[in-house]
View 1 (cartoon, rainbow, N blue to C red):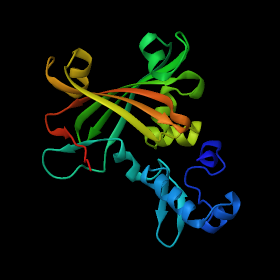
View 2: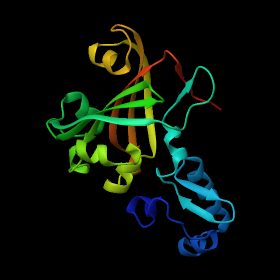
View 3: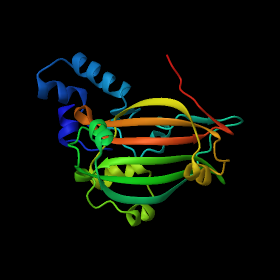
View 4: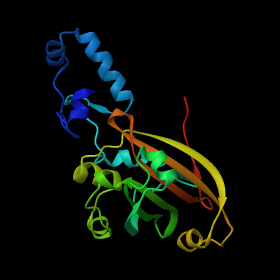
Length: 224
């Protein structure tokens, strides 16, 4: 884990073989295999048959759906989607943001808004808060010019890998802004998914408030 956190092995890199790691850390191969299994279960590493073990990366298209827990009422979730940046600006952390991201109140933050569409249907409106010091040059132009997912952009440009998230869900009514963007009547029921995402060292690096239209989609989480 320390080698991942320090950047010795970056996203997408192959890690040494089990025998090499056992010799390096002076432990048995069984101990190494168990540690790799645990990190693979936590989506930190990925085993590829006949190729070895690699550091997980958000550039893998499958990682997009690891953090997006929605499914259509009918059929399968389309892999084709549009992430549309709307706004991006700098601000100072208020009490809620500072507490959530572990910052001093008044510390620089970046706030961005984006719309996620499947086909022609807007499904999720996100408002995202980020520590300003870690995403210093992030602008709306950079977001618009990127052909990557948000987490892939954060990983490749800023070296910030999202490794786990904590979510809370509740029902809310659409205000004017969310209603206009999601093309639903004002006051319509929406699902609010509040997510705090963490990088290595259990450090929070994103607070996201996602407003989900559930006309044709529902929140899906497989347990067990």
